[in-house]
Every structure is written in structure tokens, then in C-alpha cells.
Length: 345
Picture 1 (cartoon, rainbow, N blue to C red):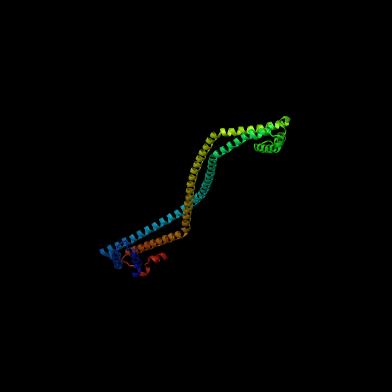
Picture 2 (cartoon, rainbow, N blue to C red):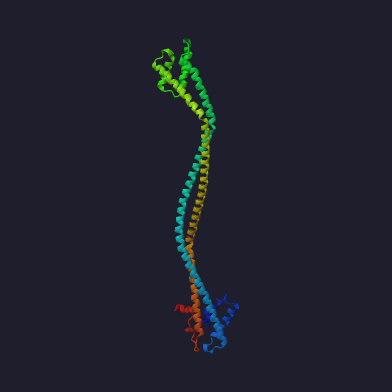
């Protein structure tokens, strides 16, 4: 009898937490006395105790059934999560690739914007330098105009009119040489430059057609030079306005380029953050996938454990019910199978 009751007594131990420990011990104590009597010979208290034991065993079975259901649900959720993780990894890999492309584009935009700022800065500097140099340019042109006018009325007039005496031929030659040099600076034609010294050394009354043309063209070069210088002098006020406007335009261009650069920098930072987030997400998913086999094995083992406990509980309850419903003709001890023996049979 004691051997037959061992599975029931062991199963009742699992009721601790469902019912009080003292109640468990009481049920374990009375079950041998209640079972030892045949079904028809038991008094009311024995039947009441057996009903309590049956209820307790069913509560244990219900708890273990809930544990199996929970383990099944956890395992199913994990397997679904595995499938979802694989899909998520594929999606995130696409996001990483797109983020890398976006970052490269934004970085290039930032580099281009930075180059545009440098170019605009240089353009502004040149415009400002041009504006600041206008006064010096004006002074230089006025000086050039004054010197050219003096050359026309003094040195040139002297060599053109042959104002030098025969004994002043050295002074005349120096004046001619100086005149040719100055005219060369005016952009005198090479052929005219070659013919002019001979023409000027010839006395005005003795100059022939080619000599006269050389002197005439040289003088035209001087007057043309003076006209151009005067045009520049007359245009200085307008030139000052134009250069001032150029500075203003360059400043606006620089401000616009700097604004674009700030936007490009912000977008580049945003693209970098997006890439880092995508890479981090990918790493986390890969980490979870790598750990999945171990976790899956653990959950499967827990599921098997819960199912084994439920099977044992079911066998113990079935065995108890067989003992409880035994007729007045008690079975020999060696003909009664325990749950373990039933599982083996």
C-alpha cells in the first residue's frame, strides 16, 4: 500500500503554495487510512478527505497545465520573434546602405558648400581690395596724365619742331631717345618705333612724306593716350559706385554661401546620426539573432520540463482515482501499477 501511495504523496508535496503546508501534511497523513478501506466500506469523513485530495491533485494539474500553456506561448512568441528579427535585419541592412549613401551625399554637399564659402570669401576680398585701390589708381592716372601732357608740350614739341641747334645734337638725341621710350610705353607700333628716330633727327623742313607720317602717327598716339586717360579720370565716380556695388554683391553672395554651409553641416550631422542609429540597430538585432539558438534551447528545455511535470501530474491523478474507486475486492499489491509503471508499460 505504501508503495502504491508514493506517487500521490509526492504529488501532494507540490500543493505547497496552492494550499497551506499544514493542510498538505494533513492530507498526506490521512490518505493511507482513507485509501486502505474499499470504496463501499469508507465512512463519510474518509470520503470527504479523498474528495479534498482529488481536488488538490486537480489544482496541481491545473497549475502545471497553465505552466505548459505559458511555456508553449513563450516558445511560440520567441519563434515568431526570430522570424521577425530576420525580416527586421534585412530591412535595417537596407536602411544602413541608404544611410551610408545619404551621408556620403550630405558630406559632399557640405564640402561643396565649404568650397563655395572659400570662393565667395576670396571674391569679397578681391572686391574690397579693388575698391580700396581705386584712390591709388586715380592718383597714378592723374600723375600719368600730367606727365603725358608735359611730355606732349615740352619734350615732344621740342623734337617735333626741331628746336635744338646744330651744336645741341647730343641733347636732341637724348630727347628723341626719351620720346621713343615714352611712346613705346604707349604701345607704339614696331615699324613706327623704328622709323621715328630718323624722322625726328631730320629737320622739319627737310622731312619727306614717310618722316612726316611717322611724326604725325606718333603725335596721334600721344593724343589718344591723353584722351583715354581723361576718360578714366571722368569715369572715376562711376567706377567708384560700380566697385562699391561689387563689394555689396560679394557680401551678399558670401552670406548666402555661409547660410547654405550651415544648412549643409546640420544635414551632414543628421545623416551621420541616422547612420549611427541604423548601424546600432543592426548590431542589436544581430546580437539577438546570435543568442537565439541558446535561448531557444533553454525555452524548449523548459517546455519539456513543464510537459513532463504535467504528464506526471496526470498519471498521479489517474492512479489516485483508480485507488479511490477500488471496489471492496482489493487488488493484490503486485497487480496495481504506479504512474511510473504505467508509463513503462
